[in-house]
Length: 302
Length: 326
Image 1: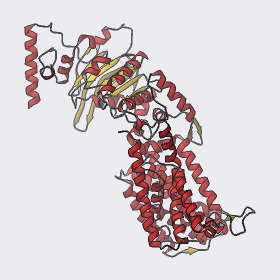
Image 2 (image 1 turned 120 degrees about the vertical axis):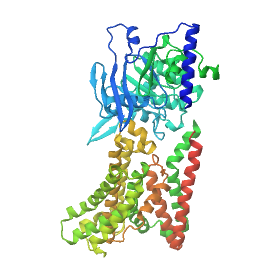
Image 3 (image 1 turned 180 degrees about the vertical axis):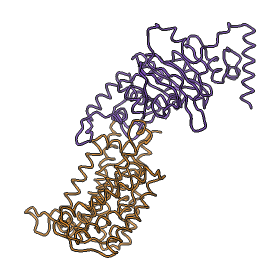
Image 4 (image 1 turned 180 degrees about the horizontal axis):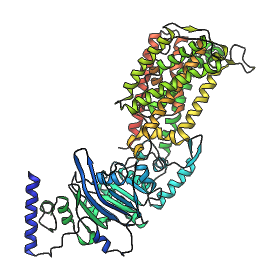
């Protein structure tokens, strides 16, 4: 009952703010295709990734009703939404963990279908998890190449070239400006931020073109969040596209180019970051559109 | 920098110091008996099949699993090859029967665990412990089958005198078999992708899965390796005792687990070394041998082994509490 009531209140507050005309009320951002971002770019540029009409059922439950979006090269797209809005389901579809019930994913101009995360990785889609998904007992360099160890095949066994893996890992970390004592250090000896840095290094070790990050800062100490966000900016500078799921508006507004909101398994709103603000995005998460102030969030924190 | 280096060094090789210390104490207490060639040969021979069981168990424990069936599988391998021997098959086939029985049992364990989605390997292998023991009694009619061809007995019984020992003393063939197995396993675990994946699964199965590792396939392989070693242990024990007896290896799975844990492997997976496992086997073996030489009762031996297990794990807990930042 309460969320509903809150929503009405917020909607009223929003319309009131609009009538008062203290700030010019913006148009509701486009739903469904990301045309606003397309407008900001040369029309010739094709998106790296396009999702068309993605629907996902789990038995009788509809997790995604109709999701459409585009992602451009070197773009950081923030995805927001309340718990259960379908963010994680969408990301699991993009990373090959789930197959969509309906809809199409076009990557680099070609429709793609993934049987497993391996297929997604093969074309350069990587995932970074909130809980890092690293093996704590293994050293940093082994985590970076886990599942893709350099080496040569003999009798069906891949003999790992440890020296090569070590030097490749050290070079790669250097390139990303991640500083560790030694690539031999077991991951369990690292802090949360360092672990997430290793996870990001792993995701980009093999020509990643799109890195999907599911709440990458949620498990970090406050002072370590900045480092991880700077790493995300670094990826963008290397031409890697990033989809960032986050509840933290600070994260979204620090690194993203564009933000997209899901609500009840469908597109709700989206806008380039320069054309929106925190309160509006928070409103989207709760399912309200186009208001600028007067949110509960402000009353609590402001 | 200095202290963690030292800690890592101790973690890796401290266990060897323990073995050497035990040998030193036994040498001082029983100088003319302990270091005699006969006694040392005996220690190696008596512990060779236990070492193979422990090596197999180690691979399983690395994945945070357990295989309770190894003792029964070893017995099944033993009586199967003994019965085949009695039926007059050529030795080339008989020596293969042991490892093949083990591989088959490992496949059943692995497939049961992954395809049937049983909640814990304890349950699946508790089942095969009973199944294999029952089959052992069925195959042998519950009675020992003795008298094996010399070629079948070879690895379990042969001593190489190398021209320096007075026959029948010498370095046992089983010593070389265990050494070859240990080196091969070390190489597999530390130098191949699949071996590293085994460690990764023990460390964090979810991380292994999202890294594209086929965890189920690796787990099946792990139980097959464990079964293979149990079958090979059956061949050794059959050779040494010149028979297949259906009560062989009762409780041997617990000794194997004890050796792995004393050797410093973590029961929760992802940690441990082949060298440590061999040291664990030797510590149990030397303890038994030493207490026998000192005429200490078998009952005390068991109590002491229990104490050593608890101590070894406690030291491990202390070490990890000091090392791991949380």
